Image 1 (spheres, rainbow, N blue to C red):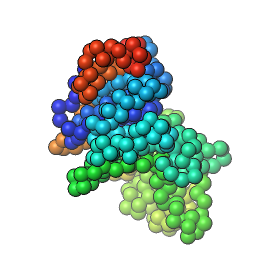
Image 2 (image 1 turned 135 degrees about the vertical axis):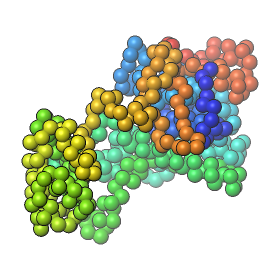
Image 3 (image 1 turned 45 degrees about the horizontal axis):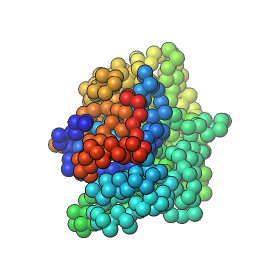
Image 4 (image 1 turned 30 degrees about the vertical axis):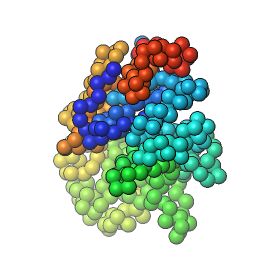
Length: 407
């Protein structure tokens, strides 16, 4: 049995996570970090998440982080008995998280109508590609597909190349965050009404929310935004510039005051007084010439020297960090953004820290994610009062499953 966080803003909340891969598990991980008791159900063969990313000695390092602070249960939801056990767990939960294709829970007799009739206060967080209704409802979806539909993918990359992607599950994380945010709003509303509700979080809508500045511009001006590489459209200078030692530094100095500080740090009096760059609008109109001038300055200097000079001048700037830079950075250590936590097989493992940081009821990480099914017997015993004989019978029927230790 894992040790649950002794306190936290969400202590006392019971959460059943039935999601898989990234969006659902991240939603559950956020709640677990702040003290909610999160029970994760996965298939006997394990969440597909366990096949993603790097492994050490057969152990998924991604799962060690994303499944942290959770009790790990395996149930075969293809069997009626497995569905019944999951339903009983859901009826004892404050929040249920799922990211199956719409209609899947209904096939298992676990739709919101069923759950709320037995537990009026239950909150059902439903994460899917396109939402629970609409003409695309039944389409399969992943985060990167949501990015394509949202317009974000069209804008990512260099203008002379096909659309690129960010090499992380960005939209899954963002939509999982929206799901957790929705769950907290529903918990707050339940205090007044006593009733739960459905939180409908769609991957394409999570991605589309990042298109906010371009929606009214298209409506009024017909502007279709295009790829601009490392430059942020409408914000100048705000770009990635080369350094003498082969690195890059991103500089964001779009406001008038910050731009003047940048010119002073560059020891380029003419730049600060140049009429072409006197205002933000003028800098946008002359961004090619301005970027070339800044790039000439950075190209003649070492990356670290540029960072020191701009930090001294209070100009927002930083190299494009690698993971090696992050592990070596004193600020990450001071803010506890790299935390070493115990792991059942590896001994310990470093994972990303808790966000956000609360002053009164902070989150914590007590244990890394472990093997699928690690806590099945404990959870079914505590939550459903099943005795050892009943658990043995379920195991023999294949309803319960357990992977190799450490998977």
